[in-house]
Length: 553
Image (cartoon, rainbow, N blue to C red; front, side, top):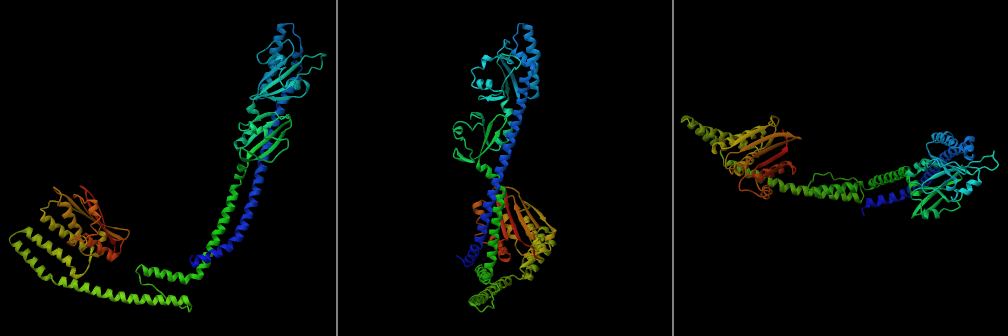
């Protein structure tokens, strides 16, 4: 483990202890408070739903009490009829009319039925003989009570009340039953159900009045007389809340998975966790800065060593410190200086050798003799009116003048293009103008310098390996432009193309002449590895060679 890493870890460990302890305590307390608040909100929602249900039941009770004490209905239910017309009049004008009005007051009432012990005939579902309900479990309780009773089966909910006639000595048995829409009655609990809660409603005797789909079967056996706050059901911890419906004597029990309640607290808890993480990051940054102060000099020495490893010896290595690290830095600096002296000695000798070889090569060509000879050929050709020979001599003179460039390795872009144009015209004469040449040169690049003889090998390669192998004609295009402070030349031909396996070797193998590899090596040697040639080719479509180097005035 690095020395700096050890310092970081030690600083981080010492600083993390109070951060983790305080952060954990804050997280625990905040989470508990948020969960309690969520439970309180859930309980308030349950109480509000129960209050809404209780208000609905009171409304239905008022309707049942109103009908049960309506004297016209009481008389109609206890009268003994001797006339069919009189019976019809009571059914239509009293019972039907009052029941219709009662249903109109509350859409939750789907049907009202009078079960009577009188001789009233059955009238649809409005009037039925009391014998049809005598065997019901709830019938004895209704006949003994003077209040509205609420009963239910699997799918229906009923509000039932006995009709009492205090004016007759021996009144008949009459029961008023209202069929209530169960979905409408328990609609106040839908919001709680949509939030993942399960609802169970029981009457005073423990019978189930209403239960959601999942609150069936073994769930009912888990209900105890004593209220509980939590329980395990189907392998999940459930929070249990209860409320009462005073009007009907019902008990409402809410079950909701505890994890759904805690999820609502995650937003703030996550914020706290992010703050703790931010504190940890701050401690890590501080430890990094603190440790760096101790090892700055070692770090600088290590970077200098890496720079030297990459081949760059121009580094500033010095130290005024008198300790062991200072001695190490000065010793490394002395070693680098001696290495630079040895390298420079070898490098200077090699450069000098290359220069002598170049001068010896140039000395083999007498430029004045060459130019005079070409001028004589041009004069002789004009004398005999051989214009093609004259043009060839002039083109050769221009080509070699820019090629030799008075021994200078750098040349203006404009002169290099003139050199290429002269070379291209010579090739066109030699090939009887069997191919076309196009130029797209941006004038902005003409003022810059470049190494000489960089474009001519690219043109020569396009002619020899592209155009000459076509059955007929062809086109070579030379373009030049500025892009991102670089000069980019492209030589395109529509020749036969180069196979990919051969294309990848063109810049690696040395050809017999001054070929693509030489151009690529010169560009990289002068400007860097990111410059040079890029080749691309498609069989039977042509080849493209791009030369890229930085602009240099």
